[in-house]
Image (cartoon, rainbow, N blue to C red):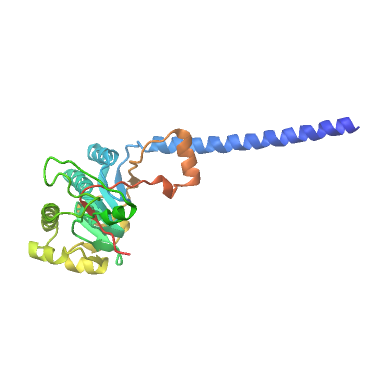
Length: 302
């Protein structure tokens, strides 16, 4: 009896394990099926309004540029809504994004919607829209350019370390973290910042119903909330995605009933990594930031 009893227990354990593996296999098949279905429907050619989310520090991104270009070629995309929640980023990255969105606007309506923050390069992105919306308390503005330097020569003296640079010209080694910036180096950087700032001001002047003097009075780096921005001309209207759809219908005859289809320009991952990512969510540690050069970035002190 004891041997039969032991065999019975073993069979029960094996049966439980087999049942567990069957359940896991069923769950995996369901997840894979949903993923395949979503992948197939992404290429659906039914009429829709494309949606592009800019919710990161703005840097150069070729995949994003390619995704925007696909919107231009996609006849089923009747309009583009750009949702912005960004403090900006590199000036050149913001410039490329702005110009790409303006290319879309040559073929179909583009509406920009500022969420929590659309400042500096984020506001530059918003300028690409035929209509700019923002929330009443959205942070808007910070028109300007910044170059930040770190100089550690005093720290190097304390630890007994020195650095020597052999350069081909007086400004070749400027700026350097190993020595205070020279007056000539400071003037050179200031010329770059001023020229880029003037370009940014011209962009706002071209895109908003404001003259240059009005823009310059607002372009001192300040940020304002949406309620103020709509009064001083930085945005057109208080609202969000729904209000953007309503405007598209009333002004550009794009039905608000058309589905929104979000553009995915993330890096492709192996199937198993994508499945795990969808089940477990995105880790903050997976986001890496590298900024260099001139910045159009709102960064409050603190």
